[in-house]
Length: 576
Image (cartoon, rainbow, N blue to C red; front, side):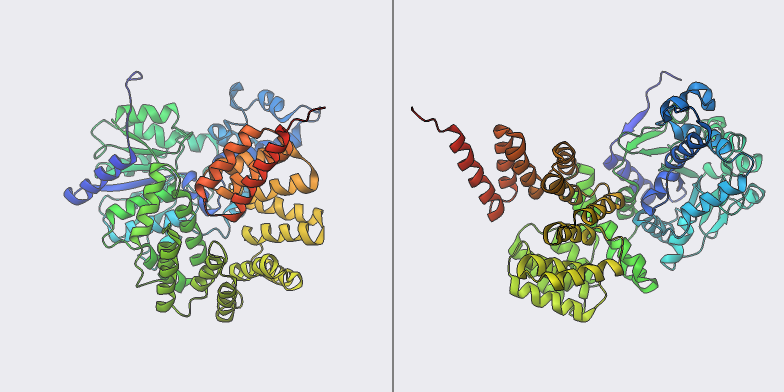
């Protein structure tokens, strides 16, 4: 069996198969097996992140001879010599036991702190839609959090039966009247199972309950690393015909399942599939399974229950749209579904999604105008339109009138306040009012990265307060390390104010890797290569690439003209 190949399908093939089963096999249901990876975009650290943090704690406590973390890990006795910092997740229970030996309650308290106040991500909201509107109502999870139940409650859906202790496993039955969440490692507040014995073995009640369940449910594994022995051994012990259909194991690029999980897939003829993310997979699956699927309608229901959650949901969906524009085929399909699924008659946000997906600026302008006619009191949509009028349209007078109108409608919208501050700084040179608005925006929403980066630029450019600016750059990158714009902003600062060219170049390259279609990132890197690396061939290639992306941009045209003049001057030879 060890030599058998595991079948791997495309994401499109898996989604098509699930749609066919959903439509044609009414007696077949899907059960979602979730791990820590599914909760990461909700702000909850993964098992890998926690295990690595605890290794650092242990190194600080136990290493008194100055050995490096890596040296100490190799000799600490955890994992029989197989432990490395990179494989910490595989030894999570041993690390937990060592870190909280003698005070297990402190471990539980740390887990509670890590999960306190976290709200369901877009992916969990979409999973709630699937649970509510289809027959696929079972979740089996190794997680201690309550994100599935929270997502159902957030959208006013049917409350699930949460079975969070092995003593209650008898309540798990294939035929349930309501959604089921089976928490096989217990709940966060019921002494969650983190020790080696508990994680390695499954209590008999769970074995019996899950065996009955999987006879009717096809397991769909998402965000689960497969590192604990309890669930893997239980699945391995099942006979080949004990699982309905073929198990589907979703994994992300660079994170394939471990060998124990692969053995399970071989035995049960399971399927591997690479997905872009938990959120992206759930978006595409909801589009296949939920009748009249409408992302905007979900957002509007969320808004009624709490504007903070609605804003977070929209931000995550917008990031999916932005990352899909020039991403992988799977990510592009995610963006297409998102754009197609919103209904402009029901939400201002639908008009924003529609406008953002339109590459033609004139058509986009008309979309915004149509949307504002339908939602004339939407400070959010008017604010997005004002930003569009500023750049790329460069209609500054109309942009300012839209910013003012948006702030009259909602004086505490931190995004609009920050964008208007940037407008006043760049277009009106009204630095006093701009700074006042930046401070107000950050006070209202301290972790909004766009405002932090813009104010950092302001402090560096107009106040010459480089230390304060650098703190804000670092905070924005700590909050969103994969924000290409923030990376490029900080790179510019390091060049102009710190003369740290090596660190800057690394950030430029990272920003372009994160967003290879950003002409702004490419243009800034081209200027850097010209002025500080003198690599004119590489610089010219970058300038041309930026102009292909933004052929009408005065900034890119001017940069390239100055570059050509500078290069021509370098080539001039003088006769004596």
